[in-house]
Length: 578
Image (tube, rainbow, N blue to C red; front, side, top):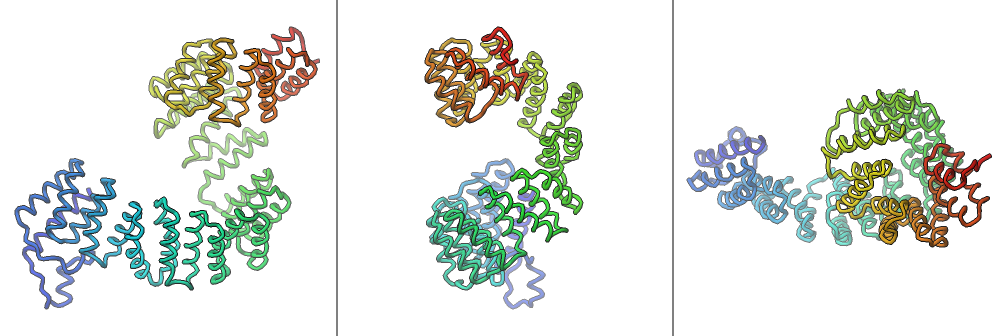
């Protein structure tokens, strides 16, 4: 619709140029009546000839039909023929839609040539040249844009790195910003821009020097102080701490700096000092909902859930706008502190935004844990899915509810239906494969996992699941070993894959290698299934007391674990735990 309206406007404009000659002696009011304020002045005298009209109509028709290549070729020709900046601007707009930077550069170059005082034209050509990596060509345009900013020059420098972010040559970007900043040595924002460019170019010492120059020109500039501290963190944590501490002594009301300082202290696990900073923030900003939320989130990182809950509730009372975000975080706290009813209520209060669907899925899961499986499934089935990904996630959530009550055939049937709608969705394939294993449908397990590996060659857990299935059944052990080794290459620190590797070595009779990997897996994650495997290997080696100790500890954590219970029943034929 926008293109069509512009088309009519341009056609009228060309016709007007043919009928109304430029009157240099006209009074100012008459000129104002003849020209719209948004249009460039001194438009060319151009008759609306048959060739021009033909090119115009061909271009517009091509545009309406979605043939951008034909449209842009005609409009560039029109821009050159008519020398009308409005046509050149339109050619540039169409070129931008093609996604072809070289065509866009051609159109924008004509536009800026015809309308050199246009800020919009100069911004466009500068952005296009940056995307093409032609920083030297873009430099004079940036110089003129900066010169035109006058009182807003500081804001312009603050946006420079964002404008130049698409250029991959960060060293060239740094050189460009340094050149642009030369006439503005007393402007703190210019030094800030150089510092950011130096940071992106991995020139950390230079980044620090420039940020310190910015602070020297404007000592109470909070954002510069925060960035200065972040740069120091890369160089020396102790220096970053000292800087934040000294800065806060001089400017105690700098909340953003205090929050940044608290984050550094969290990284150093200085819990008492973190609490001190958070107390200062909340006590000195009792009416600031943003501070309450930030303090609550930081407190959560050190495990102080009581302080977190208190401040989240204060943020709500103070009218924090994104109430859904706070209710979601509160629900998570209620879950972690074993208050499921409060968690369910809070999840239901999440009404919109990106957390809406996750909140409703958690609500359904908690409902199912109360024994209301039918109601939980109905809740999930009624939820709207905005796209295929959300629809698939709802199917997976329902499958998880059924899996918890060991209704594996129902899980399998549900995933079958899901895969009819989304046959190549990785998570559905993986989930059905695991369910097929429970039902001993090994052909489907192998079919799904091999398809998943083909779709996602870097899916470590697909290789692992297939290899583990072979190892568990003591078949195709050499291939099982290769599959699990590939999984280890993709995810070398995953304890479950280490467990599978230890298990396949055990099945192949290589007990020393098996024990090494199972010990590594158990040390990384003392999971009941890993404990079952490690205990079994120890048991068959004669270390039965060690095996019993590992099993006993695992049973205390998860007394209903299927793999653990099956292992105990198979090996001992009697009660292991007195």
